[in-house]
Length: 123
Image (cartoon, rainbow, N blue to C red; front, side):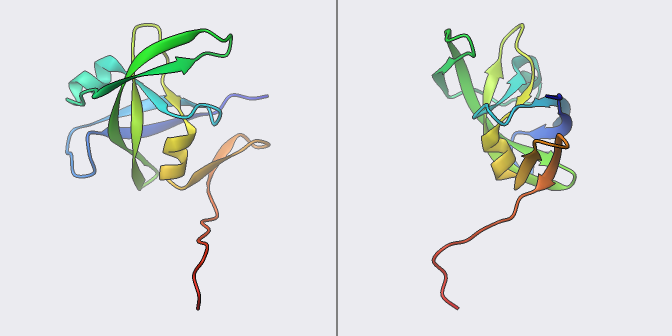
């Protein structure tokens, strides 16, 4: 199994001029994305709640959560963000991938636009 990384811009919201470029490990098994708290502080993105997360070894940890806007290759979308603490690495999770309309190809380990489906529409 290979490792996939991607560089994305992170902003407070879509119209924010201030942004940071962050290199993420793409982890489609993670629900939320994680951005180091230092970067979020510089962008003035504040956490608004605390959530319990389970690690791969079964350990439970608590992290603060905020929200922000992600951009990849000109496409953007909002998503929840885990406020990373010392020792945490940037992760790009499934919620952000879906918000950006991206899917991870497990064979080539590359990001691609997902096929967008809409159900229930009559023509």
